[in-house]
Length: 221
Image (cartoon, rainbow, N blue to C red; front, side):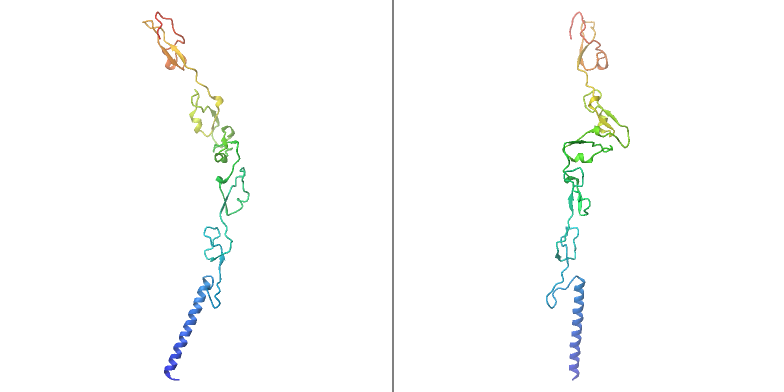
């Protein structure tokens, strides 16, 4: 064999070795990525799993959906609701949400957050009425009752903002009816009249001490 032919054969052998090494490296790389595409028979090694990114068990490496996806569900965990779901608390994929609860209706409850009887579900129940009388004990402060109806003589505006105060309409005292009070006769034989709700001769009616018109030489209101 000539020197030229030997050189050509060595080059071919070197190229074949390089090609084999490249093919082996390429195969290893594809296996590291989860499978081999193609091959002699065109097979594909699929990675099965959940391919939905909104699922709680989404597998970013999966390329074949296997129906195993689970999703974060919402349920009512309030035991007083009509649609209470006892399984939601035990399910890590279930989120308790008060707004989904169909709460009991036609009831009253304590809505005072400082009371030991506070019922948070009442505020979310359109058919639940807050009843201060049900707030019987408090963790701190002094409990009291007062008249919360404006227009009464003993109206207490502070009771509405006092967590330890409960409104009691039986304590309300209505203002007296308006009445006419009169002055005594003046030097001209006349008197003056004042319509007021305070007793004659007191407060703004200090100068009007009489509850009936005086008899003067000339009766003129």
